[in-house]
Image (cartoon, rainbow, N blue to C red; front, top):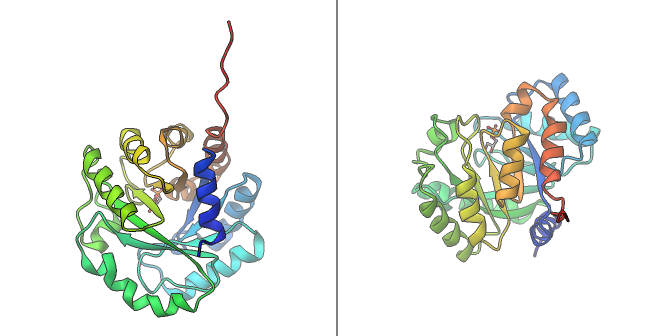
Amino acid sequence: MTGPILSELRQAKAQNQKKFAVLIDPDKLRLNHMEQVLNLASNANVDYFFVGGSLIVNDMLDQCLTQIKSLCDIPLILFPGNSFQLSYRADAILFLSLISGRNPDLLIGKHVITAPFLKVSPLEIIATGYMLIDGGVPTTVTYMSNTIPIPRNKSDIALCTAMAGEMLGLKTIYLDAGSGAANPVSTHMIEDVSGALEIPLIVGGGIRTPEKAYANAKAGANLLVVGNAIEEDPGLILELSAAIHEANAPITKLTS
Ligand code: 1GP
């Protein structure tokens, strides 16, 4: 069964509309800072919150989700760094299979353990092919997953990996240069991968400017994810959201 968030992403892709997700890592965001981020996100028409991190513990996750729910109605999507980061307080979960790596635990092992919990949960489960792309610095997720990211100039490997993920029945593909990446995923790679996919493409990691967010959206990303840059400067939410949604605008021909 397709849930409302995946339906919305599919519709957005079909209509070339772009979506923006703010990543909240409960470990990093102080609670007083959180209110500022939530207010800005509501005002800027942010589409989703991704909530997760590589190391967070469950009680902080629940506390964070409860606080967000009490202050705004932007949908909450779990972006779990490990199989303990599960909570019924979110709306959906990215059920991530790390298809860029060759760690069987992160391809299928953890999924077997969490499947019974998810089967009875109210969460919308979005099967996602998660692909780490080399972002120029060792990131937490690369270390924690014990996998090698795809080299950033190897679009052909990314393309074939994403195609295989789609053929295996995954519902979205997430190209991630990793949180705090020095080099975000290139527009060249986004163009190559998005051009071959019928499922929605999520892109994140190291996006720090509205210009890069806009370029990624134009290159074919359907959902842009930003975390670190917003933790450092929450005011960026307004500019990033405007840039990403600006990429929705139809191209009008100038007549001379
Ligand atoms: C990381 O894609 C997300 O998994 C967001 O990355 O924190 O670098 O924006 P940043």
